[in-house]
Amino acid sequence: MKLTHLLLGLPAAALLASFAHRPTPPVTYDLVISHVNVVDVATGQLRPDQMVAVQAGKLVRVGPAGQATYAAKQRLDGRGRYLVPGLWDMHVHFRGGDSLAAANKKNLTLYLAHGITTVRDCGGDLTPRIFQWRREEEAGTLAGPRIFTSGPKIDGPGAYWPGSLEVETPAQISKALDSLQKLRVDYVKIYDSKISGEAYLNTIAQAEKRGMKTTGHMPYSVTLGEAVNRGLDATEHLYYVFKACSGKEDSLTALVRQSLTTPKPLGLFAMLPAVYDTYSPAAAQRIFRLMASHHTAAVPTLAIGRTLAELPDNDHAHDTLLAYIDPRIRATYTRRLASARQQSATGRAFTKKLETKFSSLVPQMQAAGVTILAGSDSGPFNSFVYPGASLQDELVLLVQAGLTPAQALRAATLSGAEFMGVAARTGSIAVGKEADLLLLAANPLANIANVKKIAAVVSRGRVYQAPELGKLLQAIKNR
Image (cartoon, rainbow, N blue to C red; front, side, top):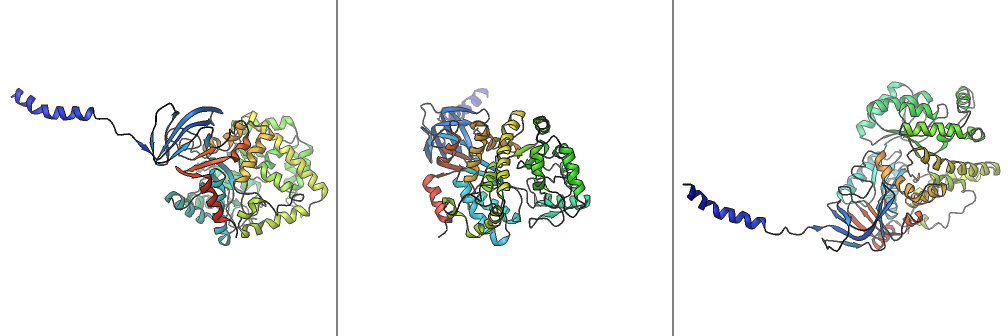
C-alpha cells in the first residue's frame, strides 16, 4: 500500500520539480530610467549611476545601474542627467468664479510643463471644479499636477474674497468646519481681511480638536505666538512672522486692538513701518524656536513679493509666458498693477527694503529648525506671477536668501509631502513611492537654477518629454 502511494506520487513530484526549475519570466517595466544621477532630497546627497524602474505609476526599483538590462515599455537614458522628485508648489490659487474656471484649468498645463507635479490650492471659489479636475487627472484624461485644496477660505463678516466662509461666533466656526469636513478638504485656510482675533484663534483651536490642519494669514490683532500655541500648522507669507520679530510686538498688537473701535482701524500695512523699526534679533530667535518646537511651518513666497515690489518699474508686456495666460486671467492683473503705480516713491522704497528684510529671515528660520515650504502664490489676481515658472524663481530666491540648493529642493519636495502627511507615498525617490519625477539636464545641487533645464517630467508614471511638454503648452497658447 505504501509502495503504491509512493509510485502514484512520483509523477506529481516530478511535475513540481520541473516547475521549480523553470526560469521566472522577466518583468517588463512600464518605464526604466538608466544610469541616472538621483538626488536624495532627504539627505541632500547625489547617488550616481542609478537605475529607476516604474510600474503602474509606482517606483518599483531604485538602485545602482550595474551591467544588467531590464525589459521596459519605455526607456529614458539618464546619462549626464539628474533625477529629482516632481516639484511641489505649496501656495497657489484657483479662483475667479465660474467665468474663470476654464481659464484656471489651463494653468494646470503650466505647472506640469515646469516640473511641478503637486500643488496646494490655498483657497478660492472653484472647489467643485478642483475636485472634478482631480477625478479627471486620476482617470488619465487630464494632464496636470496632483492638487491638495483647502476649499473656501475662512474669514470674518464681509470677507474680501468671494466664496469665503464668514465666521464670528463659535457656532459659526463650528458650522464652517462642518462644511469643510463634508467637502473633504485637505486642510483649513484662514484669511485676515475681516476676521476678528478671537474668531481667528477659535478657528485654529476648533480645527485642532477635529484633527484638521490649519494655515493662513493672521490679523494683526493677535500675535503669532498665540496662534502657534493654539495649533497653527503654517503661516503663509512673512508679514506675520515679521511682526513677531518686533521687540515691541505686544504693544503694537495692543495698539491695533485699541484702534478696532475707532473709525480708522490699523491694519497690516499701516503697522509695517513700526514693525520694521522695532525689529529685534532676540525676538526673532524666540519666535523661530517656538515655531520649530510646535512644528509650525513657514511659506515665504519671496517671488511674488519681489514681483509686486517691482511692478511700478517693470514692463511685463513682453513677458514670454504672458502668451500662455488666458486673457480673462490677465484682465485680473490690472487691479494690483494700478495700485502699485499709485504708490509713492517713499512707499516703493519701503516695500523693496521690506522684501530684503523678509529674505534675511529665511536662513535664520531654517537654522532654527523651522520647516520652510516653497510656494509661489500664483493664480488669478496676482499680477505676472506665472504658474510653474514662479515656483522655479522661488527656489532661486530661497538660495539667494541663504539656503543651500539642497535645502531649497527639499522645501519644494519632501517637506511639502511631510506637511501634507503623505511622505510615506511621495516627495522623494524610493521604492513604493509615486512616480512623480523631474529629469534635469544639469545638476540642481550645483546650481538651483538648473531646475529650469527640464529633459522630461514624469507624472503618475506617465512620461512627458520636452517635445510633448511643448505641444501641451501650444494647446493653451493664446491665438
